[in-house]
Image (tube, rainbow, N blue to C red; front, side, top):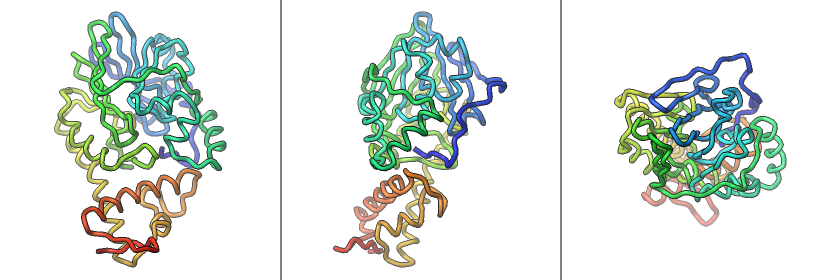
Length: 312
């Protein structure tokens, strides 16, 4: 979760929703091309079933076309992907089983975020206010390779964890539209700061993403739609390179002087120095810890009995 200091509660109602159509698949763009806190909404008009991928803030401004959704297949569970679920209480909601507890209850969401109890109450109030947060205890689980036949279109799930444990890329066939979710190719870079996140899994998922037989790639945020494979692959490589950039920053900090994990967290790997919010320290701690674990496994960093890290 990479929540800014202030999150606008909604897209202004007077702003028309831009779209792109690919056969039975439509992409409706959130504010600023789906830049967080908004997102891009994918809708599929199967001849038997109308489906949606996630429900970002923009879903509250689409109207009848979104409200007719009968099936929601979640690529993963975070607050910004649940913002329209309250509009479609009768729709079936399917979530990868690893993210299922997070969508079913607030306790499950807090556990997935890894947010401390002291900030959980404040966080819940913010998500209810700014993302219309409402859990879905009726959500059903799915596994890697799951398929949904919508009638003349089919959805296929590819489990690609890292951002969350249950993060999936969703492919619509025969249109060849892949919803890559929060492998979103933004300038922020990969986010793996939740309790259920994994740097190692994120690396693997990005390596396998080009293998999905897609012709169109849709990101949750900011980048929007790619129809040129080479452009998509260039931006994916730049996104993945953020991991090595962060690793080099950690090494540079340790080259300057040995540091404890707490001192490294104060340097801020993800967020600007001085940026404070209830989730920042926990997210920075998990992110930096994962890089340290990789560096120690490679023999480039060591830690002493007092918890001080230094170059090996």
